[in-house]
Image (cartoon, rainbow, N blue to C red; front, side):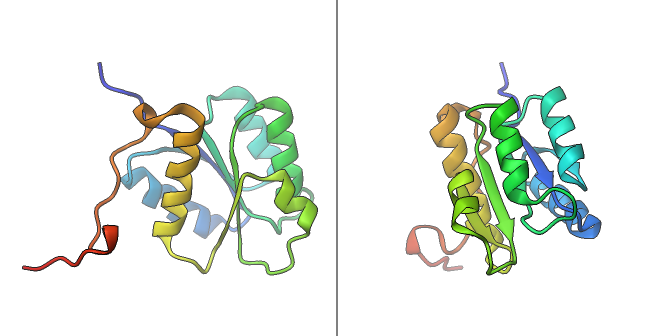
Length: 143
């Protein structure tokens, strides 16, 4: 029996970025639900099974901290990653999320963070296979 794909809920008010990350993480084997506002994200979370939430911090009407708190209220135990380019994230916001990744960082770091939270939440049976790269385990690929 094949295992189901883990579901990410991606919340970001920057729609072109939202579409790019949806395509990228679907290619990595995830099911990706996306919302361009915190309110829409909470509605999707209430109606769907979600394994991990990735949310921007700086959004109008409902910021990433409010999204994280809302997710934790309706889906306790669901990990939330704050994915932000802002350097001005308050300490209380960092306490409301399970991890924080910089938008300027590598996609491999974000993917590793998602995998770590999935591992912590459900165990290894839920994860898609890791993406191999030349930098894995510090080894070089030689042709």
